[in-house]
Length: 269
Image (cartoon, rainbow, N blue to C red):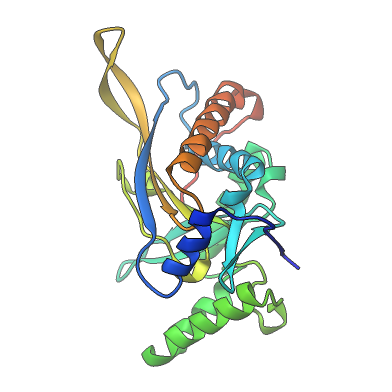
């Protein structure tokens, strides 16, 4: 069993599950702004974002949950999925690299696993979703939606291990992260992915120099924008505010200590 049923839910959440259970869009959008002016390393901030996110998920169960049969369940494991861009001359494509039990990883572990996973995916050797993606590619258009819905139902609602069918048992994490900064995009808001059952999605933008007012003076700072999309059924503004405050605290603490971790290269996903 991958999930533990939540014993108590708020009146708002119970109503939200019912209101948005059969349609509509429960997405809420916003930005988090992080000042990286004092960061000593020039490597990608992506591992820092993922590690800080895992710490928040550890302390806020609502951010590590899933909706099954109209009820709230907490996941036993803390997994984060990262979108991987697959460049091609004729067409670009996307896949996911899922970091399982990411809360137990160091920054160096996150960096190395992401780099290795992205390399395999771009070489056509996707270790997690390779077979599923090839199957989707071969299916007729009218069957693609049926397959995705069936897979989501068996993997998430019934919590079945589909590895014997060459399909991943834990395909996605509670949160999806996309590194749009690697594409030269400064900030972006991205949609939730319904079949993944992820309840939040973060876009990590490109760090850029921007003017800010500090102590009544205009100064130039290095700013990182995170675009946040979260499912309103799982938490509201007050929950999000607390999680964001904890995320920023964890992120800046990691920035101060990251030199000790020895991050050395740019993560391209």
